Image (cartoon, rainbow, N blue to C red; front, top):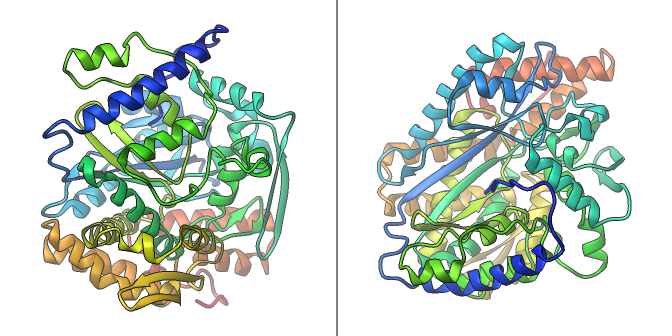
Length: 494
């Protein structure tokens, strides 16, 4: 969805042309999605992994373009920060052992990056937020030198009058001002793509919305920002507040460009319509393909304008149209790391629970108000395994601690995976990782917090953060799931 931007500046009439193309695209998309056979079979899962590049002492290594060039692997691409990398994994069919395939591919690419990175004094680290980041690492001069980021930064500046304030409270408080989208370089995610047939895209999207919170609660890996202990998934708060229009949109009663959304869906076309109607055009770069003309010629239109516009609206879950012949839901809320096995396990739980909810029908959207699902999401991000979450069980809506809820949902997630043809051993292996994380409460975020607190008792804050990253990297490379990691340091308790 990081659509390519090829123009530095835009003419006065470009926004009008682009907006007209967007409206045409919605009509064309509705027609295409009704074509017999489009989007079938919907049998694949894909993922994107964002990572930090760090030096041996654990600080950011701003060498992403050099590492990508040296690696010569088309799966690797850049992200907003010059110390960020993104891996686009190979889509895999649900049937068989897809999660083993995901884990193995991540391990192989991390091995490649370990070899290539040595040339530039850099290591690749999958973690939601890098504890050793300093405020100076998040300025405009640290952005990757690519046109897309310069244009996005300029256009988002246009939507506000000055620097925006980021204010996040947890055990500690963090209040900073930012004037650039470079602050987003502090956030690395694990993004899961689930294909759906067009007539089930809306219910699949709603199912992902509901399923995200319990999984996020037991997957936190971003508790520290600038030496402050904040949310279990501080990345959620920082990304929302740091994308430029959050405060202004909220004050005006509008939907911010980064949000959980504003309601359950109203049909497949409605998901895409909301993204067009709720948000101003940010980058009015229109293409050489007119969507109406492309439709008349009988092939799948590229819908460049719609796809570009979608790439400038960063909802935590969003629909994706692929002109190659499919639609899918992109789940963007999970953090990077801690290990390949943890990320594969998260994917298994999300796919299984989403499939179960989708198969059961849309009753959950009637049983549970959207505002409760939205509340679940932010509670999960802030509090973690002990967050109290609402869930629509067959016997009614109940409020449970996230850790307990996840354990109750494991069997139905397993049923969902079985329905997709996933091997029994595969299901048991990966869902057990999620179950153990829930029952022990040992997430990446909890491990980081406890390590930081133990280290800070015997050294400075800065030294504690560096030692934490060093130990995290050592444990990450063992690929043992985070719930098995030893107590952070002597004197610390799990």
